[in-house]
Image 1 (cartoon, rainbow, N blue to C red):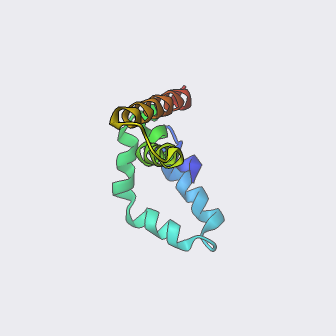
Image 2: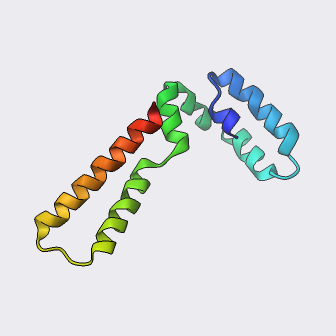
Length: 105
């Protein structure tokens, strides 16, 4: 599937989908059928530049941030005041943003 998502053009993605179908049709028939039935909707993905497409298919940044925020706030237990929690959450978001920047490069 990665070859389909990483294809530079919609035409190349179509070729990769055919290749995927030939190899995996028997094992993943539902996936192939879903791609074919939703081809028009899924092809919208290729209207975005490659940098944006990479972010879309490799990570769900919002879910990742939420997981990290829950993790740091849960592990701390109590906070001296609301500002302490806000600072911790701010620093967590900053750290996650730096990681995203490294992924894009």
